Length: 120
Image (tube, rainbow, N blue to C red; front, side):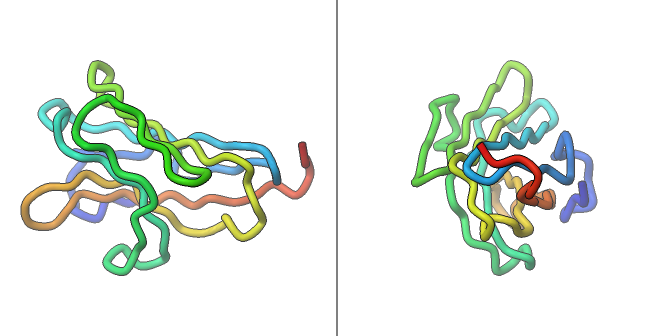
């Protein structure tokens, strides 16, 4: 994954993820120790600076769900997981895993595609 900040503090486990129409997919983003209690977010849009945040943690491990998307942080494994459910064709887009911080947030790009071969 492309790391906007130019550091390895945040990486996507896979920078391209696919799921079946009407199914679900998960994205995992891993961060370095020290970022556990920062807010994590999942954002949609080709441009980092203009992307639209869909779900965001409050800095804890509590799952946050909004519409068909959820995010959960596992602070022991330094990984947060985003789940997108009931996938639609128009969900295919550029998304970003992010960590909120003072100054510029950390972000890493993830391409989401919908697999035409299998529909649930």
